[in-house]
Length: 260
Image (cartoon, rainbow, N blue to C red; front, side, top):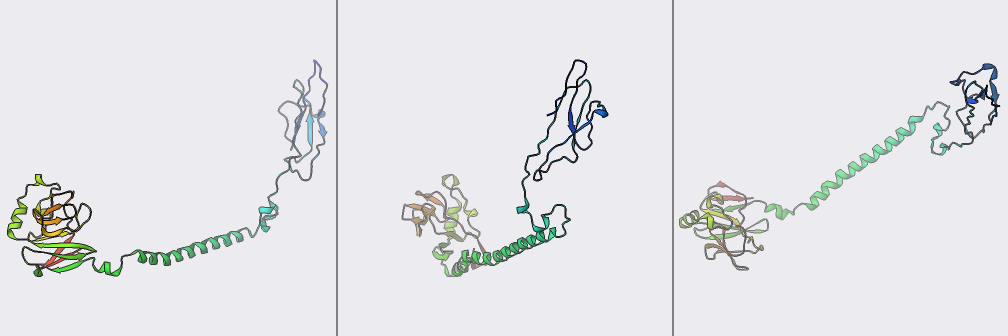
């Protein structure tokens, strides 16, 4: 530290500056004194020139120091061979990047190829069996069902009821008061051709199979828990909450129906 005598008439200030940076207060140029500053080889700093002390008039005394013992960490371990020397122009800096990009791109391409080979096989494994797909649509000749009778077919593993209704049954079901129904549906909303009533034979209560041409309403009856359906497949009595389900079907010909 620099000691400067003080008096009532004269006050001196001491500032250390580098790189020819002059202090803000006026300084007598003949009072500049060089102060040697010790540096270490392993502690690089911002100093480029020897420090200098300045003495000014009508200012307080100051001494500023800088740290020359701080060790800067070395990152040479993490650098490539081309980047060890900071002062040397690096000509091969992009070679490592190209290799990295090639590895990443090759890995991504391989992953996409494996996925394209594995996913179709996995989806085909989860698909329905051929016998199930064969029953996705069923063609039924209606001429084999006599009037007033029902026949049971198999569609997608479920019983399919097809009833050839008489004119009296059609009139009776069309005149039912919808206010009396638990699941209100008009008969015309459940059939495409009034003569043919096509429903899935699964009770909407617990999934039992009803008996056709039975029950208090002349339609279907589930003996498991006593659900009664009419000739339109609508629930009329018992614990079942909904009507029998109507599957999708079309009539490509008058005596042919395609279900599914």
